[in-house]
Length: 392
Image (cartoon, rainbow, N blue to C red; front, side, top):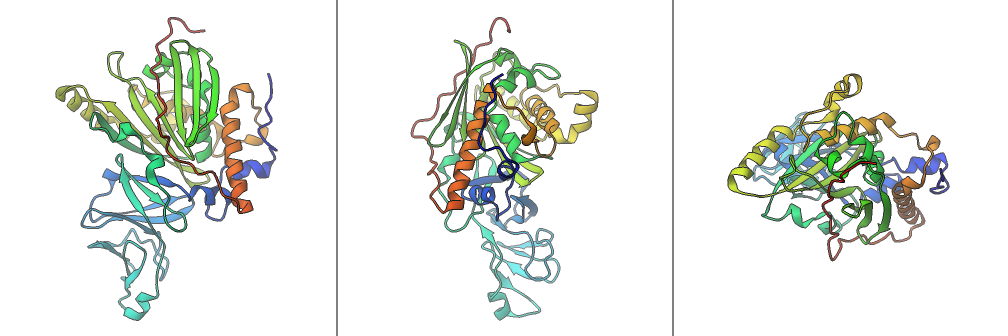
């Protein structure tokens, strides 16, 4: 097997890939982009949630108007969690001593200290916006960058049923990003337990691989036969757009978006969007009901069933594929051991991915501009593979 040298692969260089704290090169890079942080329907008006995103505690809340806000996780006073407090109007009051903050992080009231003290207190506040059933945040410095990079036509079209999901996986975010740029795994991982519609359609043939850096990320092409060509449109730094089969051969293929957002070095906020083509009112109602029954599935909650008893979910559209990915990725441990791996020619996508991230982090460390990533002028066509008559 040909072994590829992906870069000077020393421990320090590889460790840069898995970090996300604000003072790390990767953390600085990631904070230049919008990231999903919560499923929108999980946050009702007048409620709050405590989250950990990119190694920071933050507080997500909705004002009584329904508008979402994101501020620091702890009160400036005695450093207790803010999400345990009360939403009052469009502001959040701390449960401990009543200090109140608006959506920018400005303290507007410190009852025992007085108005002059409150004026001097400000905690972090971050821009947020809702899209495709998720709440996104920009946690970088200064004005937020353009949100268009995240957008896909299928997630906005009235011709699709759009469903979002949210999971937490107890492993590093970057090995999940690498999985998106590993087309060969589909031939094996998605036959674990059983082959669902996805595994059956793609087959177990070994694909010919092509990778190209684009203005928005990486285009991955996996050709298994002239009629079985799968393309993934991966957007920098952590978003993959693919299509997968419906529940049956008669149902249309589904556009799927997958985001992997670091909570910390050993936990990932994993978000998905399903954009399912509409058919007719009756079929659409049935599909929506079906999705809502299955969308809360998280393989991390079935870890023992998967690893100890090899029990995979029967649902093939929403549950089986992430369970199979979880089964493989969690086998790498909380943080993959990249120092002892042996990369081959089939890992060209992973090699390219790492080189791009190292290049961008090097630019930040040297004070140079990074690449100006932008949405493609013309979307990448994602063809529907035709099931091969025989596997090889």
